[in-house]
Amino acid sequence: MDDDRPDVVLTGLLFYDLVLTGLGKPPTPGEEIWTDGMGCGPGGIANLAVAASRFGLSTSLATVFGDDFYGEYCRDVLDGQEGIDLSLSRTADGWNTPVTVSLAHGHDRALVTHGQVPPYSQDALMGDPPDARTALVHLEAEPREWLAKAAANGTRIYADVGWDPTRRWSSDLLDQLSLCHAFLPNETEAMAYTRTDSAVAALGTLSELVPVAVVTRGGEGAVAVDQTTGEYVDVPAVDVDVLDPTGAGDVFGASFVAASLGGWPLQERLRFAVLAAGLSVRHHGGALAAPGWYGVHRWWRSLEDPGLRRAYGFLADRLPADPGPPLPHAPVTPP
Image 1 (cartoon, one colour):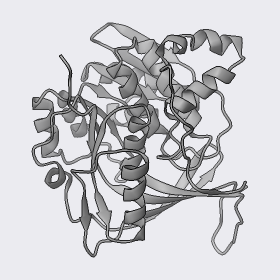
Image 2 (cartoon, rainbow, N blue to C red):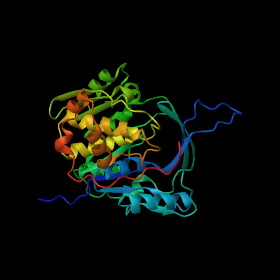
Image 3 (cartoon, rainbow, N blue to C red):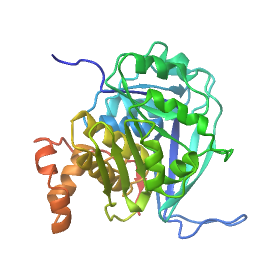
Image 4 (cartoon, rainbow, N blue to C red):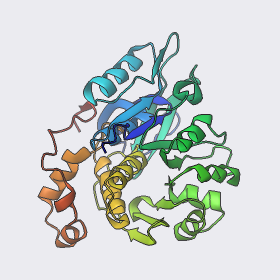
């Protein structure tokens, strides 16, 4: 029987991102630095939404747009260009879309953001959440009511978590994992919340709390356990030239969901997500850097390394026959 539910539903704060690359070195007070490149586009929750949509997943996004240039631009990109369902989203009169300036340097970036709390909460936007196959969720200290409703409807929850500015890393947040099918933190977050000293140790603790646990390790790849199948996997990162790492974790999460909905084995799911995240850091910004099927197909067709050809041989059977047209990336100045 056909499943006409959305593949993915998600909600969160949207930003307009301005990304500066090629700094040479971090700026210091009183200093002016000229950069080699610049890109702009939707950010925040848009990173996950665009990454999912570019892998052909029907994606429904509940967010708030400001009634300003930035909000109008982001809405046009997400709806008109990326084909994301925005029927759950709202435009707030008199509220400005948050703006983030990302200073990309080396394999990391620093962020400076201007914005205010949106006038509509996640629970107000979602209400009684629509039935969906999956939800991509960013867990916060205060549980959201819509999350329990979605889980009760049979929606599989794939969750991540962010940096705790209080540095308390309260383990109470992990209580929300009882609602989740999968949890995908990075190693810093995973170790902090589990009070462990390695990604593998953190994974062991998390695997007792959620069916599928994944810990990402940036340039070292990722490790994962699927308790439903008994699989344990440790995969390395793909060596790429890093332009901007903004949103790579979001691309990882959306790619993992896409592969999971395809019923792939854990080894393939993890390698695919690591690859997609790696391909995204070669472009400006998080949302419009997502590679989609076209980007993965292009990488596979050009791949000559025999080791990678073996490791990613499963792509020969997984890639769609038609990966679609080239994808637009963030508007940039020439490097």
